[in-house]
Length: 154
Image 1 (cartoon, rainbow, N blue to C red):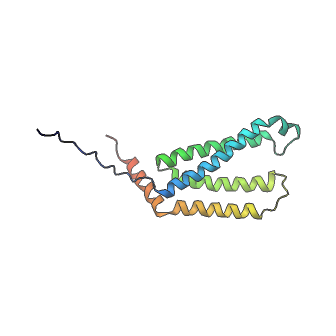
Image 2 (image 1 turned 90 degrees about the vertical axis):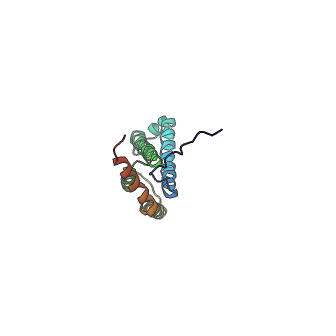
Image 3 (image 1 turned 45 degrees about the vertical axis):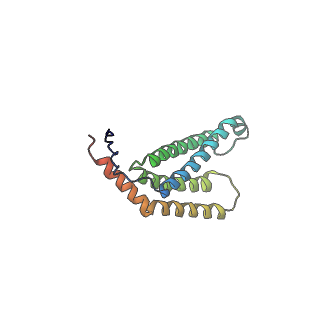
């Protein structure tokens, strides 16, 4: 008796997701969860925020929390699925999130806090994202995905 010959599955030309991209996605997930929780808390305590005239107001806070939640959710999907544009979109999101955070802190919030800790955390997070985005494995992964995405589908 002869056994039927099995064909081995063809090896994919797409590179597996490296640890740096997974860490990037997890970090984006943390920011997404924080904005989702912020949105939940704003909705939960809407009446109190309105009653005490919180500045800049629950409308502003909820809209921006929702926007950052949706951006983060989209980025996570893109990073985990390996969409080639996720690299650029993540870079832009880090830039705009940092800009928004500092505009919000300096001009819209009535906070009396020292800016040293938020500044240190901001610099650390920018460096962290920069290192992950500039990592050789990350760049190679997204270049491979872009090449793969451009190939004609059969």
